[in-house]
Length: 206
Image (cartoon, rainbow, N blue to C red; front, side, top):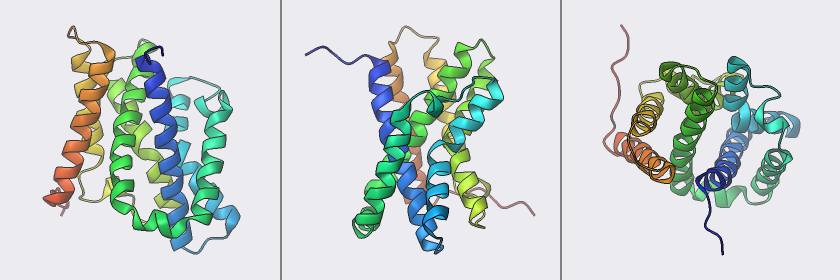
């Protein structure tokens, strides 16, 4: 069997992250007692909102999910799975948290990669990586009248900035892309878990 390239690995993990984000959107919509259409909109926006905003800002159009039907199929599968197995997903919150952490790490990397590929500066690339990872959640929370997670004191967007910076810095070394991806996602997961376990927060603005 041929060895997966880093781009193939990232693609499949990206689809998995899209699935998890779509599930999280549906679960929140269900908690808010939205109807089927409302839940579908929230699920879709959670899954692709960040990437869509990133692509529009850097002028990469049509945006990613419009060029690959697999993303729409994955989102639709997540919606159906959540409808039929909602209780199971609710019981797997720790597992979902892990995949969410993997997802934000990966979406950060994808944003950084795509932006650097267009010749934009590393600072802008890290910003776009963060947007990729968190703004689907921002749109989701805003639409259901919640304060977005990145605007609370919880360490979340900062993790994406750290991950994006790490991925870019490692690009200045001789490490291959597979190791850069693994190290960056590992760092993202570690910081995110430590922040939750140790209740790391930022001070509220007075």
